[in-house]
Amino acid sequence: MLGRDVFCRSILLRNEVSDPKRYHLFFVLLVLLFLLTCLFSYPDAYSNIPKKVTDEVARYIPITLQSSSPTIVTSNFQNSHLKTREDPYFAFNSSDCPTEEWNNIRTSSIPNSKLHREWLDKKLKTIKYLYHTSPSVLAAFVHKDQIIVTLTSENQYNTTVYCRYYDCRRREISDHFESVIFPQSTVFCARRPGAKYISISKTLKENPEYSVPIVPRTQRPPHYFTVCMATLYGDEPKFLQIVDFIEYYKLQGATFFHIYLRNVTDYDRVLLDDYVRTGDIEIIKMHDHYWRDDFMWHNSQINDCHHRNKYFSKWTAVIDIDERIEIRDDSYRTVANYLDTVHNSSIVNLHFLVQWVIKQNNTPARYESDEQLIREMIFHKYQNTSKVGDLWNQPKCIIRPEKIGAMTIHLPTAVYEGEQFTPVPPSVGVVRHYRNVEQRVFAGALQRMMSHGPFTLLPIPHWIDEELTKTIVRRVKWVYNPVDVECIKKQRTYNIHGGISAPCWLEEQAMND
Ligand SMILES: *[C@@H]1O[C@H](CO)[C@@H](O)[C@H](O)[C@H]1NC(C)=O
Ligand SMILES: *[C@@H]1O[C@H](CO)[C@@H](O)[C@H](O)[C@H]1NC(C)=O
Ligand SMILES: *[C@@H]1O[C@H](CO)[C@@H](O)[C@H](O)[C@H]1NC(C)=O
Ligand SMILES: *[C@@H]1O[C@H](CO)[C@@H](O)[C@H](O)[C@H]1NC(C)=O
Ligand SMILES: *[C@@H]1O[C@H](CO)[C@@H](O)[C@H](O)[C@H]1NC(C)=O
Image 1: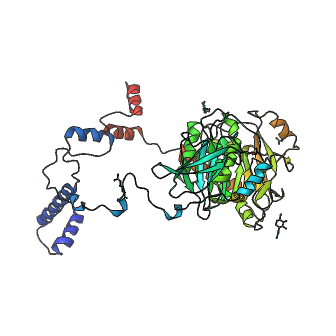
Image 2: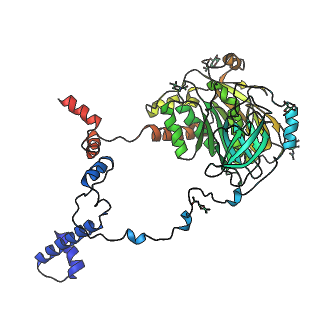
Image 3: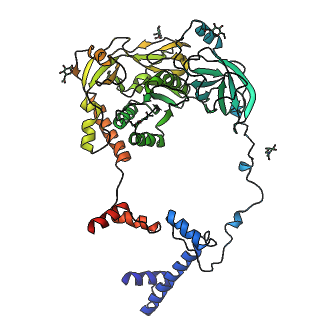
């Protein structure tokens, strides 16, 4: 009461002393004024819609609709925006394609084509793998001087093919380019003005495969250090390995990940999709029109990773989900810091040797609690580590993608310039390879690992353990431990939607009966 008095006095009566009843009257008037303002500013968009329809809408969206609204003077505020002339920004029709300066380029040859021919004649790669009968286009990237198309077929090396171009409305641009499949799963194509999609065909008569978007790679690389993760498949639960992998390499300075996906559980996929949301990863689904077992995607995955990262990143690590490149020299600490010290342009492939870690169990299928999560973290649970393997024992690479001509799992088979491989001394860095002892696909893997004894406990560096534990817990809880509410609150929300009931509410009712 005192508050109201003071309020009215100060605003309206300027401290004159008068009848207290008047203050109350003024206050009531103020409230009325407020309510009227609310009423008139209520959007009248729904006022002309029959009640039946508004009731139906209210079932799906949380809004209170006034179907039989009082006669409100319709202000013409919506119509006042109507103009007769079209906004020039939207002055195009269903058949127009914009002319883009950067894409208004036509080329008639492929860079390094002489070199490619030489490599081809040296039979750089001749193994025909699997049974595809068409090129099987995976993706395409446009550079200043060419378009690189990646394929999933691996049996059509040296086949003559045609690059088929499409405009922004996927109409074919009748200006094809003849090329050859080389290396194994790649076609280099010339550029065409306005080309936005591309396909590859073996003849000019056939209806080409579905075209794919041509992704721009015409700027200075936006990333410094990226990581490709080899194709995910198989029955071991993955969420903890995925979050460990991504958070670990982020601590090493990586800023983007290409994750190749064959198959994971729906639960694991939720995590991947959340990393897509935050712009940390791109998922490349490995799937085409032909038979192949899940583990047989490796070569075409490596090939795609190589081309996808050209002019996307300065350095790219080409590795598997269970491998962690670790810097052992404290003067560098992280991979990115180490890369910062590489200035010799003939270094185009850093070759890391491997230390194996015995991993006896699968990682858990689901998050249960922080304690469980921290206990199950791979780097906490598995530390029994082998000696460093020798030069050709499954080494892994960090490459300069644009300097490499053809890439395989452990080594480039051709480079445009520089050394084919530059071994990194184990005192500077190694790959910590967590190897599950259960045989899954490859026979003899366990014996090969055990031959690298003696094994000794070797924890990861303390600062990484600390940081990584924190970042993993944070991400996992964000994704898998959403905030719950009491059943009564759920029931209130369900009720808005045409009076339906929350499942928990029905359960409670049933128990009380
Ligand atoms: C679309 O606009 C272009 C000019 O931008 C014009 O040449 C063409 O005839 C238009 N097409 C249709 C179907 O209106
Ligand atoms: C590639 O194909 C051409 C014919 O198009 C042939 O002359 C050449 O020998 C082939 N090279 C290899 C390495 O198969
Ligand atoms: C994918 O993985 C799930 C779960 O591991 C499995 O049930 C399913 O059969 C797999 N699908 C394929 C196509 O491999
Ligand atoms: C650059 O690296 C190459 C290959 O390792 C080596 O031969 C050359 O001496 C290096 N140059 C400099 C300036 O370090
Ligand atoms: C590490 O692995 C070796 C080889 O299997 C085994 O002999 C040794 O006991 C293990 N060490 C520890 C601490 O588990």
